[in-house]
Length: 358
Image 1: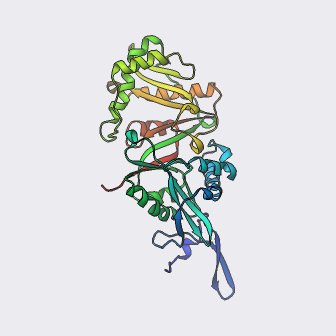
Image 2: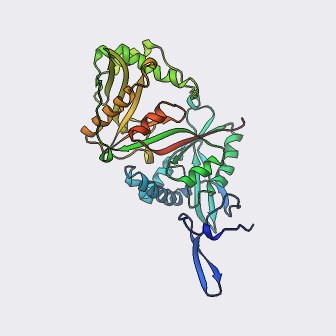
Image 3: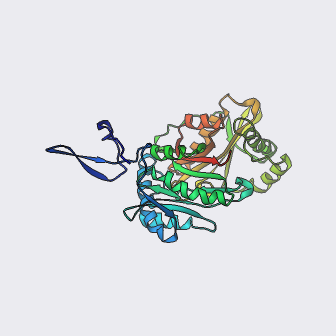
């Protein structure tokens, strides 16, 4: 197949190898060929095997190096191909499978997925942050085409992938595979953040436990409604209170509450990012605090309590000596998806999702 590339497309692409083309009898131009969406990708695709981890590590290290240009707080160790290859190897668990792409015998892309518990995620396959990289983002589509057939044949129809938010080409490739934006992971650099007042916010006390339980229930209640429609159902108030009674004094967590006219209307929980199971590997920033939970009661929303709680956590993280703060939110949660970016959080990874067959 012949693909036409206009002169205007000769610049601005940096991810594919150089090729030289004659532009006349006495001149030569050097361009980087890319896979255009309307061109057929010239790669051979086969199933991923354990021996591919080394080549995959080289590709992942380069993708991560580029990613850190936008988010320098992401872990530096994965720029080393040895560490990146180990991250790929660690993703090779029971029931994992995927694909690699080759060009002239060289690995130019890989994709690797593994299932998570079905009770939480349905019949699923997850491609984690270390689960994919390619010299040319378009190659992801070829690899997914091979890998996804096996997954669907096995009945795994709910597919998830973590994609660097700053890689527009890679995000586009996944979008053109039918994936949509479900969840955001984000970072806020403390060196670039001007401290603001957290008026009306204080540290939680044991007497606040009944209010904290109500707020624990308020967030999942909110997310079961439109437009989030989360499948996660809230526990009873008694269950939340029992958890607070057990864990309130855990020194690894700091809880803040927002008050208005003597009523606790909001809460937020801060801790080290190392406590988060959702942020791991390439997605766990170095020396980072974590805004792990925040909620405001429905009748008190829209008056700045959420922002004040966020500022309290940011201030706590700065005092604790962290370099940045991480958080995450559902893209369809209209409140958090607006509040946290307005506070200064910048998306680092996007969780994309596709449900096959509907």
